[in-house]
Amino acid sequence: MAGIQTLDLSFFGADGLISSFLAPTGDGFVLFDSGPASCVESVDRRVQEAGYDLGQLRAVFATHVHLDHSGGAGVLARRTGCRVFCHPKGADHLADPGAKLLPSAERLYGDMMVPLWGRTEGVEGDALTAVADAETVTIDGLEVTAWHTPGHAVHHVAWQVGDHVATGDVAGVRFPGAEHVLPPMPPPDIDVEAWFRSLDRLRSLEPAAVMLTHFGAFTDCERHFDELEDRLRRWTAIAERLVADGSDRDALGAELADLDETEMQASGVPDEVAERYRRLCPVKESSTGLYRYCTLRAQG
Image 1 (tube, rainbow, N blue to C red):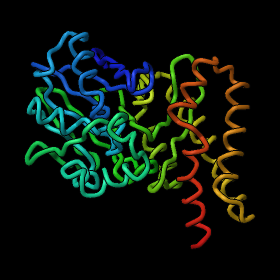
Image 2 (tube, rainbow, N blue to C red; image 1 turned 30 degrees about the vertical axis):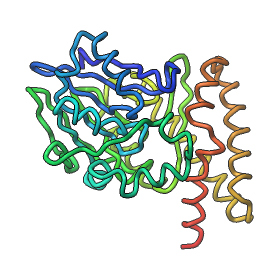
Image 3 (cartoon, rainbow, N blue to C red; image 1 turned 60 degrees about the vertical axis):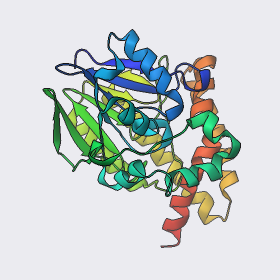
Image 4 (cartoon, rainbow, N blue to C red; image 1 turned 90 degrees about the vertical axis):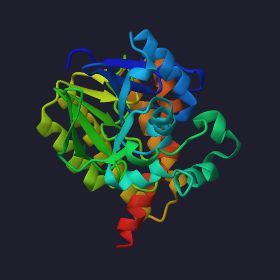
């Protein structure tokens, strides 16, 4: 769809890690993913560079509730009066992040919680709307369709606008200058079989471009989906083998990290881009979700 712009949110002072996507409406614009609360000022700056004022923000379409994707939605809604749209299973987390979402993140990030993610605020009252699967929302003439796409998270939505689809994390992590596609796999919601079904659903939309929060828009959609599915299948097979052998999650992380380094080198990923993969989606840490999934499956 013409007119969509990629906004680099300069997360933690680094370019090319987290993006938001701006789509124009009749008298303003909407965003697909807000980024974290720590990036709200970057959103404001990038919006102005794109030719708009933050006060023209009409809606944020959250792909899922993880802080790097929608942690800033409440701040933006309170500041601008915009609406926020999300999956029904994510609505409670966005309305009251202090109940479960933030305590869980604080256990993981400790003293780095606020420096990384900022001060997350809830989306108040009628500003928050949960959207059903295949439902279309119209904002100032712009039609946006929700496709529920679990696998990375149970509360994941891919948002279709014209022939473009904002895929959050369900279509993986990839950076400009590389064809390498990684599956981000943090606990607790990884569901590989659901992920495969979601990829099939994305294929059925026949998009002209996928818009990845990490990072940017890509037009080789079929090849991109195939590589992600192939890697996810191979990694799951490795995880199942290690779980069956009684190996721990550290062994899985080490094996997958070594394999990923080998495959990045084989596909010619430039060193600077490879470092972005390591920083944004460290395989050893990310693989804990896959290990949990395979362990639960083995236990029946």
